[in-house]
Length: 277
Image (cartoon, rainbow, N blue to C red; front, top):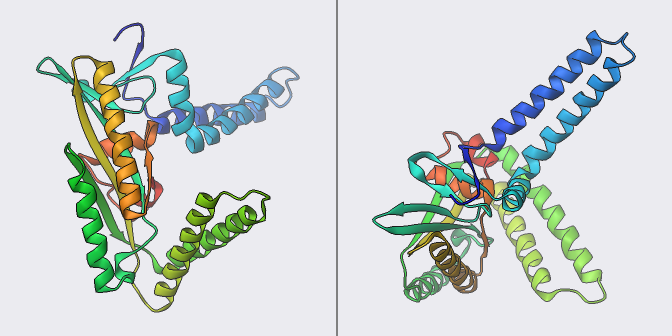
């Protein structure tokens, strides 16, 4: 493990609970020690600090902890000797004298095949086949689907539509607008409008989470990691261009979710919605 520290099964959720516990202790203590000029302010500060850190950890832990582990050279050891390096961008395992490194990518699809004509779907399938045929290593595509609540789904898409329109308007108003951003925001607006129209017409909404996984080998952890990242970047460019989708490298908690989904999928629609990539 080098000079790194070993953390076993670190979970941002547990850290959040611990910080909430500190906040609760501070809140209770500040009331019970209200007459103390020394302890009351200290416990009140503990309450506010614990509550604030809990919220920050829960919302931005996936970004904060990879940064911390990278700076402190922390190595996370998981069950079955899977290892997560400080950068938290791959998952590594040693077997048979080789190191295997797996990288994960999230896929955001803005166009639905149900909205396309049969001819357009044929062309879309051909693009997908051409993209896959150009990849020279095994790739795993995974998708989880579930039936969603109609009213909640419509409110969600109406909110997304408003946000996308606002982003598009702001980008267009810039003196030097980014063409790529405008194109992405226009796709988001179009997708949101289509989804709302489908919901209004009585279509039963389905939720989907899509991600990809690629694995590379090497004689060392560094070699396997570098190869996995190279494959992931090639895959990102190939799939995003061929299918007109947004592909992003997953790190930290987002990557760990995908790793967990290899064994257990979210048990409910709510759990799936709370784990959006």
